[in-house]
Amino acid sequence: MPPAPRMRRVDEAVRAVLADAIPRNVKDPRVGFVTITDVTTSPDLRYAQVYVSVLGDETEQAGALDGLTSAHGILQREVGRQLHMKRTPTLHFHLDDTVARAARLEALIEVIGPLEDLPEDELS
Image (cartoon, rainbow, N blue to C red):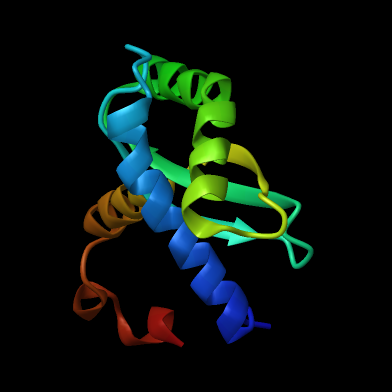
């Protein structure tokens, strides 16, 4: 079931504030180039799952997540200050591995080859 229009607006507003606040307010050197890909807030606005994409290898990605987690208080305060919400959600950061999964699927498809090359009896 898709989120209600109000929740989508809240999620997008939180995403926009975080996307602006991270480069301005987070001075942690572990947090390099981070992109906020999605935000999902709980219906009671107590929690927000923040999905991020980080350039770099697994070590750099883990470091960026640690840096964001340690800066969550600064970021949460900025969300509350800009959005004037009754309750500011507690932020939980997660690595968004959608790009990596898509690249892996694309590589697997390349290895298999196009469907036109398969015999007719294997397509059914």
